[in-house]
Amino acid sequence: MTLDITGLKVSIRGKAILGGVDLSLREGQVHGLAGESGSGKTMTGLAVLGLLPHGSQVTGSVTLGGRELLTLAPKELNEVRGGQVAMVFQDPATSLHPMLTVGRQLTEHMRHHLRIDKREARRRAVELLGKVRIPGAEEAYGRFPHQFSGGMRQRVAIAVALACSPKVLIADEPTTALDVTVQAGVLRLLRGLCDELGLAVLLVTHDLGVMSAVADEVSVMKDGLVVETGPRERVLREPAHAYTRSLLDSLPDSERGPRPGTRGDIRTEES
Amino acid sequence: MTLLAVDDLVVEHRSPGRPVVRAVAGASLEVGPGEVVGLVGESGCGKSTLARAVCGLNPVTEGSITFDGQPVTPLGLRRRKLTGIQMVFQDPYASLNPRRRVGDQIADGLRTSGDTTTTPADLLERVGLPRDFAGRHPHEFSGGQRQRIAIARALAARPRLLIGDEPISALDASAQSKVATLMRDLAVSSGAGLLFISHDLSVVRLIADRIAVMYLGRIVEVGGTAEVWANPRHPYTQALLGAIPKPDGLGVLPAELPGDVPDPADPPPGCRFNPRCPMVMDVCRDKEPDFGPVACWLHEPR
Figure 1 (cartoon, rainbow over the protein chains, first blue to last red):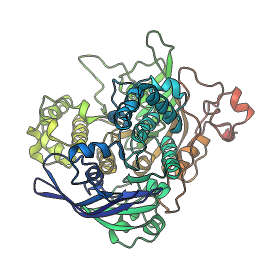
Figure 2 (cartoon, each protein chain N blue to C red):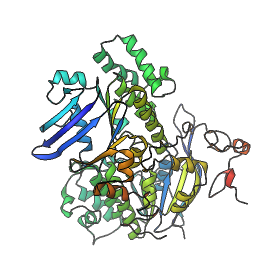
Figure 3 (tube, helix red, strand yellow):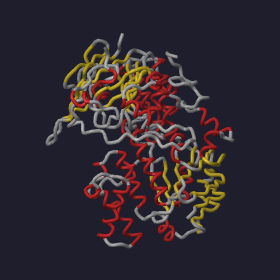
Figure 4 (tube, chains in turn yellow, blue):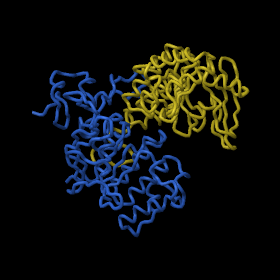
């Protein structure tokens, strides 16, 4: 199933946040959305799920397999949210409920959306925990979020998002709060799940390295507009838009950019 | 001359009903005046415990910490002599007093240093905030602005050593490098040393003169930033750097370091990294490498 965003405009109390965003997600592909904070990356993700703050006005269209999401009645939207479109947030420490067991958080929406009994939900939950490669899935089911490390918590959050077999996964900076070694594991997991389950993934991140590692298509946002879209290799190697180029140039790793240990705007003692 | 010398430091956490956890197990580190040292490592490796011990917030079990030739004593409840060391904490939502105006909180620092000429507004200006923000309360600011206020408060006491314990990890991704470079600039321009702790290697690389890599309570490699980056010698440093995805557009998934950080209450025998090390040798399982600057049997000094 594909998700198409066309001409999405969002304004909050008269202030324009998004000025006409076009994106399309295809199954089995990771679509990366890059940009600085305040460029509207997260808002785009939230708009798809109808999670925008109160008083925001949305125009344009978001269609999931031909079905318009923006005009859905709240009840129908609730069916889509968590059921067909799911989201993973930046910080697993805050997106998971600290006082509920992982199992409870995994089965709650599963029972609601899929209308399955407790035992079946539990079986699926344990299977999911195994799928996101949490060691000892049976025991992990009854544990609380604080008993897991950061990387494991994010895996649990991904399992929660995948519980109702969604078609579209929106991952908002899913690895920003994690250590690099753990990040590598989570990225591999995301990529693997995308290939295996045919998920359409919208990966929102500011890290172009992460983008380069997992995304198939890359879109770059600036001030609420998509300034460039294209296959990963082209956008990151031969950026057409000046803004994309400036983003790449500002990275310490780029050959054109500053050398390691030095940076244009700061003074350094050693050269 | 060194400003801060940490020598063979051991810090243990004791909690009832649990085995003693050696969070820091024999770490040595030096920071000079005007020098920026980045301390990196995975979460749970003891970076923060080391920083807290340097501040006098955690009791030292063994080893010594000297600041300006004087041993660092535990922080008293009411009075502290140790205002030369100031710390910026991880979470600016928790480290600022929500019920006091930010100007008043910065003024506390000015009072300790006996500074009568500087006003809180001057310090706000130095961290890039408008002068009239001094009369506001912390809830009126965003995370990045709060962290700037916390930095201003730390600088108000005119520290000679500034410690940042993951000062950027609670911030929005794009504010991170701005706040980090600000910390560096302010510390260096006032002649203070900076011990910057972070798990984000790319930011440490931007601001640090020297990098110290920590694994399970020990410093495994120390060296100049550019040098460590270009030529990491310890297998753990290599794994850490190899895990950073490169923005080359080739779609290469970063290398994964197998396994988790072992429980510090029960570290593996021999070299602490041996169960996860791709280049493990027999000697690694028996003897712990206790030399520097690279604590690895592959790089034993002769």
